[in-house]
Length: 275
Image 1 (tube, rainbow, N blue to C red):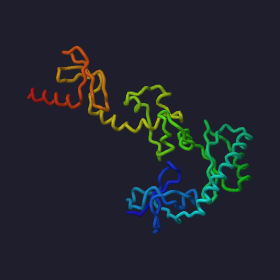
Image 2 (cartoon, rainbow, N blue to C red; image 1 turned 90 degrees about the vertical axis):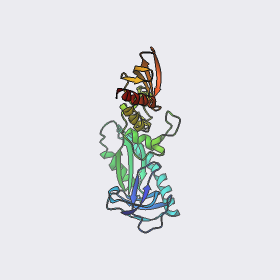
Image 3 (cartoon, one colour; image 1 turned 135 degrees about the horizontal axis):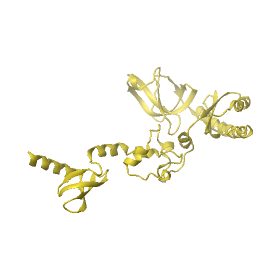
Protein backbone atom coordinates (compact mmCIF):
# COMPACT_ATOMS: atom_id res chain seq x y z
CA UNK A 1 0.00 0.00 0.00
CA UNK A 2 1.16 3.53 -0.80
CA UNK A 3 0.29 6.89 0.73
CA UNK A 4 -0.91 9.21 -2.05
CA UNK A 5 -2.71 12.46 -2.74
CA UNK A 6 -4.68 13.11 -5.93
CA UNK A 7 -3.68 16.28 -7.77
CA UNK A 8 -5.45 17.94 -10.68
CA UNK A 9 -3.73 20.60 -12.81
CA UNK A 10 -6.79 21.82 -14.70
CA UNK A 11 -10.42 22.30 -13.71
CA UNK A 12 -11.63 19.11 -15.38
CA UNK A 13 -8.26 17.47 -15.98
CA UNK A 14 -7.08 14.00 -15.06
CA UNK A 15 -6.20 13.21 -11.46
CA UNK A 16 -2.60 12.15 -10.85
CA UNK A 17 -1.29 10.50 -7.70
CA UNK A 18 1.75 11.85 -5.86
CA UNK A 19 3.60 10.88 -2.70
CA UNK A 20 2.73 13.47 0.02
CA UNK A 21 6.22 12.97 1.45
CA UNK A 22 5.19 13.49 5.06
CA UNK A 23 3.63 16.93 4.39
CA UNK A 24 0.39 17.79 6.21
CA UNK A 25 -1.74 18.12 3.09
CA UNK A 26 -5.53 18.45 3.05
CA UNK A 27 -8.04 18.51 0.22
CA UNK A 28 -8.16 21.78 -1.77
CA UNK A 29 -4.57 22.69 -0.88
CA UNK A 30 -2.47 23.94 -3.79
CA UNK A 31 0.84 22.15 -4.12
CA UNK A 32 4.04 22.23 -6.15
CA UNK A 33 4.95 18.86 -7.65
CA UNK A 34 7.48 17.43 -10.07
CA UNK A 35 6.03 15.90 -13.23
CA UNK A 36 7.37 14.57 -16.50
CA UNK A 37 6.79 18.05 -17.93
CA UNK A 38 8.75 19.69 -15.13
CA UNK A 39 7.72 21.48 -11.94
CA UNK A 40 3.95 22.13 -11.89
CA UNK A 41 1.31 23.81 -9.74
CA UNK A 42 -1.83 21.83 -8.96
CA UNK A 43 -4.78 21.45 -6.64
CA UNK A 44 -5.29 18.52 -4.26
CA UNK A 45 -8.68 17.00 -5.09
CA UNK A 46 -8.16 13.64 -3.34
CA UNK A 47 -7.14 13.84 0.33
CA UNK A 48 -4.24 11.65 1.55
CA UNK A 49 -5.16 7.98 1.43
CA UNK A 50 -3.64 4.54 0.92
CA UNK A 51 -3.92 2.75 -2.43
CA UNK A 52 -2.76 -0.59 -3.75
CA UNK A 53 0.33 -0.64 -5.94
CA UNK A 54 -1.79 -1.75 -8.92
CA UNK A 55 -3.64 1.60 -8.77
CA UNK A 56 -0.53 3.79 -9.12
CA UNK A 57 2.24 4.27 -11.64
CA UNK A 58 5.58 3.65 -9.96
CA UNK A 59 7.85 5.26 -9.03
CA UNK A 60 5.63 7.88 -7.39
CA UNK A 61 6.89 11.42 -7.62
CA UNK A 62 6.79 13.48 -4.43
CA UNK A 63 4.98 16.67 -3.59
CA UNK A 64 7.76 19.25 -3.33
CA UNK A 65 5.89 21.67 -1.06
CA UNK A 66 2.56 23.30 -0.32
CA UNK A 67 2.11 26.36 -2.54
CA UNK A 68 2.29 29.83 -0.99
CA UNK A 69 1.21 33.29 -2.12
CA UNK A 70 4.41 33.77 -4.12
CA UNK A 71 3.66 30.61 -6.10
CA UNK A 72 0.14 31.86 -6.86
CA UNK A 73 1.59 35.10 -8.19
CA UNK A 74 3.91 33.11 -10.47
CA UNK A 75 0.90 31.19 -11.82
CA UNK A 76 -0.93 34.44 -12.62
CA UNK A 77 2.17 35.85 -14.33
CA UNK A 78 2.43 32.66 -16.40
CA UNK A 79 -1.21 32.98 -17.47
CA UNK A 80 -0.61 36.54 -18.63
CA UNK A 81 2.57 35.50 -20.45
CA UNK A 82 0.62 32.68 -22.13
CA UNK A 83 -1.93 35.17 -23.50
CA UNK A 84 0.88 37.22 -25.02
CA UNK A 85 2.50 34.08 -26.43
CA UNK A 86 -0.83 33.15 -28.01
CA UNK A 87 -0.96 36.43 -29.94
CA UNK A 88 2.63 36.08 -31.09
CA UNK A 89 2.11 32.50 -32.25
CA UNK A 90 -1.06 33.42 -34.17
CA UNK A 91 0.93 36.04 -36.08
CA UNK A 92 3.70 33.54 -36.88
CA UNK A 93 1.18 30.91 -38.03
CA UNK A 94 -0.28 33.47 -40.40
CA UNK A 95 3.17 34.52 -41.60
CA UNK A 96 4.15 30.93 -42.43
CA UNK A 97 0.69 30.27 -43.92
CA UNK A 98 0.27 27.07 -41.93
CA UNK A 99 -3.03 25.19 -42.12
CA UNK A 100 -3.52 24.91 -38.35
CA UNK A 101 -5.67 26.51 -35.66
CA UNK A 102 -4.03 27.58 -32.42
CA UNK A 103 -6.26 26.64 -29.48
CA UNK A 104 -4.33 27.44 -26.30
CA UNK A 105 -0.91 28.22 -24.88
CA UNK A 106 0.43 27.06 -21.54
CA UNK A 107 3.63 27.71 -19.61
CA UNK A 108 4.95 25.16 -17.16
CA UNK A 109 5.20 26.54 -13.63
CA UNK A 110 8.98 26.91 -13.78
CA UNK A 111 8.79 28.42 -17.32
CA UNK A 112 11.06 25.65 -18.51
CA UNK A 113 8.72 25.00 -21.42
CA UNK A 114 5.89 26.69 -23.30
CA UNK A 115 3.32 24.41 -24.91
CA UNK A 116 1.21 25.44 -27.91
CA UNK A 117 -1.96 23.38 -28.48
CA UNK A 118 -3.41 23.34 -31.99
CA UNK A 119 -5.82 21.48 -34.23
CA UNK A 120 -5.29 20.60 -37.89
CA UNK A 121 -6.85 18.31 -40.46
CA UNK A 122 -3.58 16.55 -41.18
CA UNK A 123 0.13 16.68 -40.52
CA UNK A 124 1.71 20.12 -40.33
CA UNK A 125 5.35 20.97 -41.04
CA UNK A 126 5.94 23.50 -38.27
CA UNK A 127 9.76 23.31 -38.05
CA UNK A 128 10.25 26.91 -39.16
CA UNK A 129 7.54 28.04 -36.77
CA UNK A 130 9.32 26.34 -33.86
CA UNK A 131 12.58 28.06 -34.77
CA UNK A 132 10.87 31.46 -34.75
CA UNK A 133 9.13 30.81 -31.42
CA UNK A 134 12.33 29.51 -29.80
CA UNK A 135 14.17 32.66 -30.90
CA UNK A 136 11.45 34.86 -29.39
CA UNK A 137 10.76 33.07 -26.09
CA UNK A 138 14.23 31.56 -25.55
CA UNK A 139 12.90 28.45 -23.85
CA UNK A 140 11.84 24.94 -24.84
CA UNK A 141 8.96 24.95 -27.33
CA UNK A 142 6.43 22.18 -27.73
CA UNK A 143 3.67 22.18 -30.36
CA UNK A 144 1.03 19.60 -29.51
CA UNK A 145 -1.69 18.62 -31.96
CA UNK A 146 -5.00 17.81 -30.23
CA UNK A 147 -8.39 16.50 -31.35
CA UNK A 148 -11.68 18.37 -31.56
CA UNK A 149 -12.93 16.87 -28.28
CA UNK A 150 -9.85 18.19 -26.48
CA UNK A 151 -10.41 21.56 -28.13
CA UNK A 152 -13.96 21.72 -26.77
CA UNK A 153 -12.68 20.72 -23.33
CA UNK A 154 -10.14 23.55 -23.33
CA UNK A 155 -12.39 26.28 -24.74
CA UNK A 156 -15.64 25.29 -23.00
CA UNK A 157 -19.08 26.40 -24.06
CA UNK A 158 -22.80 25.67 -23.67
CA UNK A 159 -24.17 22.38 -24.93
CA UNK A 160 -27.53 21.66 -26.62
CA UNK A 161 -28.99 20.98 -23.15
CA UNK A 162 -28.31 24.57 -22.09
CA UNK A 163 -25.64 23.62 -19.54
CA UNK A 164 -21.89 24.11 -19.60
CA UNK A 165 -20.06 21.34 -21.46
CA UNK A 166 -19.50 18.21 -19.35
CA UNK A 167 -15.96 17.83 -20.66
CA UNK A 168 -14.95 21.31 -19.51
CA UNK A 169 -16.62 21.16 -16.10
CA UNK A 170 -16.19 17.70 -14.58
CA UNK A 171 -15.21 14.93 -17.01
CA UNK A 172 -11.60 13.96 -16.38
CA UNK A 173 -11.46 11.43 -19.24
CA UNK A 174 -13.29 10.90 -22.50
CA UNK A 175 -15.23 7.61 -22.55
CA UNK A 176 -15.77 5.94 -25.93
CA UNK A 177 -19.20 6.80 -27.39
CA UNK A 178 -20.80 4.89 -30.27
CA UNK A 179 -23.85 5.28 -32.49
CA UNK A 180 -25.13 1.99 -31.02
CA UNK A 181 -25.70 3.82 -27.71
CA UNK A 182 -28.03 6.26 -29.46
CA UNK A 183 -29.89 3.37 -31.15
CA UNK A 184 -30.30 1.49 -27.85
CA UNK A 185 -31.80 4.61 -26.27
CA UNK A 186 -34.24 5.10 -29.17
CA UNK A 187 -32.80 8.52 -29.94
CA UNK A 188 -32.94 10.28 -33.27
CA UNK A 189 -29.96 9.32 -35.40
CA UNK A 190 -29.86 12.80 -36.92
CA UNK A 191 -26.20 13.85 -36.42
CA UNK A 192 -27.18 17.41 -35.50
CA UNK A 193 -29.27 16.15 -32.58
CA UNK A 194 -26.80 13.71 -31.03
CA UNK A 195 -23.56 15.61 -31.63
CA UNK A 196 -21.92 18.08 -29.27
CA UNK A 197 -20.17 21.37 -30.05
CA UNK A 198 -17.07 19.41 -31.01
CA UNK A 199 -18.98 17.66 -33.81
CA UNK A 200 -18.55 14.25 -32.20
CA UNK A 201 -21.23 12.14 -30.50
CA UNK A 202 -22.28 13.69 -27.18
CA UNK A 203 -20.49 12.32 -24.11
CA UNK A 204 -23.80 12.13 -22.22
CA UNK A 205 -24.94 9.23 -24.44
CA UNK A 206 -22.69 7.13 -22.20
CA UNK A 207 -24.35 8.11 -18.91
CA UNK A 208 -27.48 5.92 -19.14
CA UNK A 209 -26.04 3.33 -21.50
CA UNK A 210 -25.36 0.71 -18.80
CA UNK A 211 -28.96 1.00 -17.56
CA UNK A 212 -30.30 0.51 -21.09
CA UNK A 213 -28.06 -2.51 -21.69
CA UNK A 214 -29.16 -4.12 -18.42
CA UNK A 215 -32.82 -3.48 -19.26
CA UNK A 216 -32.50 -4.87 -22.79
CA UNK A 217 -31.11 -8.13 -21.40
CA UNK A 218 -34.24 -8.51 -19.22
CA UNK A 219 -36.85 -7.48 -21.80
CA UNK A 220 -37.96 -9.36 -24.93
CA UNK A 221 -37.10 -7.94 -28.34
CA UNK A 222 -39.56 -6.03 -30.50
CA UNK A 223 -41.29 -8.58 -32.76
CA UNK A 224 -41.02 -11.40 -30.22
CA UNK A 225 -44.15 -13.39 -29.19
CA UNK A 226 -44.80 -13.62 -25.45
CA UNK A 227 -47.48 -14.74 -23.01
CA UNK A 228 -49.44 -11.95 -21.29
CA UNK A 229 -52.21 -12.02 -18.66
CA UNK A 230 -54.63 -11.54 -21.59
CA UNK A 231 -53.16 -14.22 -23.81
CA UNK A 232 -50.34 -14.45 -26.36
CA UNK A 233 -49.19 -11.34 -28.16
CA UNK A 234 -46.46 -9.73 -30.19
CA UNK A 235 -44.14 -7.11 -28.69
CA UNK A 236 -44.47 -3.94 -30.78
CA UNK A 237 -42.75 -1.39 -28.52
CA UNK A 238 -40.60 -0.97 -25.42
CA UNK A 239 -40.23 1.70 -22.75
CA UNK A 240 -36.85 0.48 -21.61
CA UNK A 241 -36.22 2.70 -18.57
CA UNK A 242 -39.67 2.02 -17.07
CA UNK A 243 -39.55 -1.67 -18.08
CA UNK A 244 -42.90 -1.40 -19.89
CA UNK A 245 -43.85 -3.43 -22.98
CA UNK A 246 -46.41 -2.57 -25.65
CA UNK A 247 -47.93 -5.84 -26.84
CA UNK A 248 -50.37 -6.48 -29.70
CA UNK A 249 -52.54 -9.08 -27.94
CA UNK A 250 -54.24 -11.43 -30.39
CA UNK A 251 -57.38 -12.07 -28.31
CA UNK A 252 -57.92 -8.37 -27.65
CA UNK A 253 -57.10 -7.18 -31.17
CA UNK A 254 -55.39 -4.11 -29.74
CA UNK A 255 -52.12 -2.99 -28.22
CA UNK A 256 -51.87 -3.21 -24.40
CA UNK A 257 -49.12 -2.20 -22.01
CA UNK A 258 -47.61 -4.51 -19.41
CA UNK A 259 -44.83 -4.06 -16.91
CA UNK A 260 -41.92 -6.45 -16.90
CA UNK A 261 -43.06 -7.81 -13.52
CA UNK A 262 -46.52 -8.64 -14.90
CA UNK A 263 -44.94 -10.64 -17.73
CA UNK A 264 -42.66 -12.48 -15.30
CA UNK A 265 -45.66 -13.42 -13.12
CA UNK A 266 -47.50 -14.66 -16.21
CA UNK A 267 -44.48 -16.77 -17.20
CA UNK A 268 -44.44 -18.29 -13.71
CA UNK A 269 -48.16 -19.09 -13.93
CA UNK A 270 -47.67 -20.68 -17.36
CA UNK A 271 -44.85 -22.87 -16.05
CA UNK A 272 -46.99 -24.03 -13.08
CA UNK A 273 -49.90 -24.82 -15.39
CA UNK A 274 -47.61 -26.91 -17.60
CA UNK A 275 -46.31 -28.82 -14.60
